[in-house]
Image 1 (cartoon, helix red, strand yellow):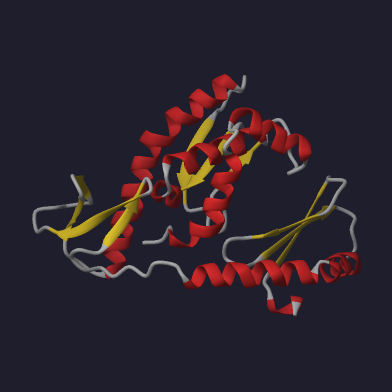
Image 2 (cartoon, one colour):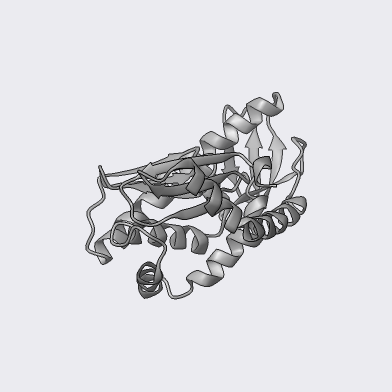
Amino acid sequence: MIEDYTIAVKRSRRKTTSIYIERDGSLSVLVPENTPDQEVDAILKANEYKIHKYQAKRELLNENATKREPVNGQSFLYLGRNYYLQYNGEAKEIEFKGRYFYAPEGSRETLNGLFKEFYRKRGHKFIRPRVQKRAEQMGLNIDEISILDLKTRWASCSDKKRKVNFHWKVMMAPASVIDYLIVHELCHFKHKRHNAEFWNEVDKYYADYQKQVTWLKVYGATLEI
């Protein structure tokens, strides 16, 4: 039942309606600002089968997600490759050397916080120059690039201030996936909707994008600490 999902209705000065299923399974419905609630309900009802079908596939993929334990030898991802956790009494933060992540001993919550900070810092160094290079190729000026906890999205952008945001978790994905996400967000400065013109623009700057979209659908659930 549609009523079983968390639904966020977002009204704006748009002319069309879009339904997005977020990574956490919640629904975002984007509608023109004067759309009555009854019409929103009708739109959801008309798309109920598609929503359930996608949700079932998402849940199946999530069942295969890697469950990591905070123990020596546990693998953690960085740029698409596995590296191994090793506790070290001299470490003050996550230290990345060779095939290992060296970390101070502590609680699971402390370890998670250290990894989040590691990915965030690495994201600034890795993603920022790639965004700037792509933006220059596309004739765009970007004011701000942030690495955040975006909750339900891998990346987002804002037109009020030329800003692009990336979830720190994308630093666990291969560089090719990150490059696709960069192009995806930058293309939104030219085309707001996910229409044919948008995807043609993405294809122009990243011809292999469909492979990266598939990777995120299949392996996105593994990008967890």
